[in-house]
Amino acid sequence: MQQEGNRENAPNIPKIGELVIVQVSKVMQFGAYCRLPEYSNIEVFLPIKEVSSGWIKNIREFIHEGQNIVCKVVLYDKDRRSIDVSLKKVTPKETKDKIGKYNLEKRLTALVQQSIKASGVKGTEEKMERIRVENRGYSELFQHAISEDEWFENLNIPEKLKEEIKKIIKANMKEKKKEVSYIVTMTSYNTESGASELRSILEDGRKTGVEIFYISAPKYRFSAEGKDYSEAENKIKKALNIAESRLSKQGVFKFEKEKLKREKDDILAQI
Image 1: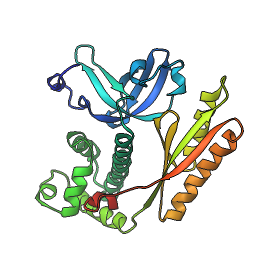
Image 2 (image 1 turned 30 degrees about the vertical axis):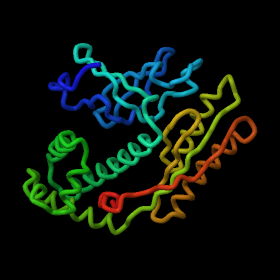
Image 3 (image 1 turned 120 degrees about the horizontal axis):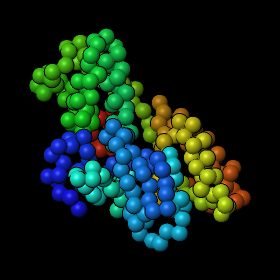
Image 4 (image 1 turned 45 degrees about the vertical axis):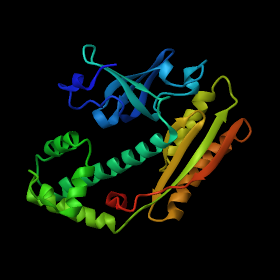
């Protein structure tokens, strides 16, 4: 395993031991090539030995193309410019926490883009992207913007953009969204095309506005947001109905509502 010093010339590369969102792009017999959306879609490799602690007969029973999973960075080879990640080393709690942070970061990124457009200031996209990369996300930026402290006031971006960021924060904090999450167990008895069937269920489920993440075979997390709990529940219900209708007679389908806890002192949870 390579040490931290090997990253000195690669600032936009995750650290050893860091949890990352992984998008599976190509599954093979000995592992899978994946991309990291948080790091400019750089390519990483998930070896088959890092997929599960148990014996794997068919890797596609655990992962498939297009799937989003949470992994841990376990190797960075500077000479070969390659990164290995592990799925089996990630606990359910780590998966839940990482998904929460990832979804928050997506919301903050969307708010930054809205702020840039509203400000009408051109040429700021690249500067904001540098801020995101240097701070590993926009969370710190928004924390300082909410406080309107010296860090934010001294930030080297146009004043008009700063004002739009503060405006959009206030507007969105008034419209706090509610989140609902379920842990879903799904297995297909179809030995020939079970993996494709599950993939189709997940794709159609996401079209209902539900975020779906793989936890560990055969468990998935279905989560949705809405202006109230009823709206979020309705999104989840549609996705669950899709899965149940296709697996009720030829597979296992179970679900349980997850209790979500938010830190009271985390002001970003209000955005």
